[in-house]
Length: 88
Image 1: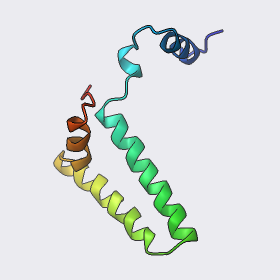
Image 2: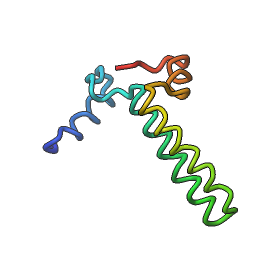
Image 3: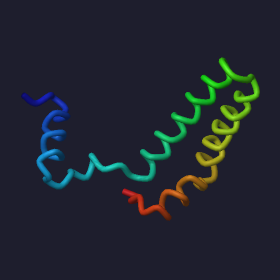
């Protein structure tokens, strides 16, 4: 009934209205990964089927990820915090 990693149990507890465990909540870092991955995949698709200029957006996202890794500053992190997303 429950997988080794507890995934099925976690789904049942959330649907039953019980509070989520700490590792199940989406924090700022996870949201940034999801958003960056979505931007990269979308821009790759658009670059292949719409215009090659969309590959510049892919490079822009990559450069922002590189810059945020070096400086520990990310504009998307500030935006998500203003929307109330928890840090941890």
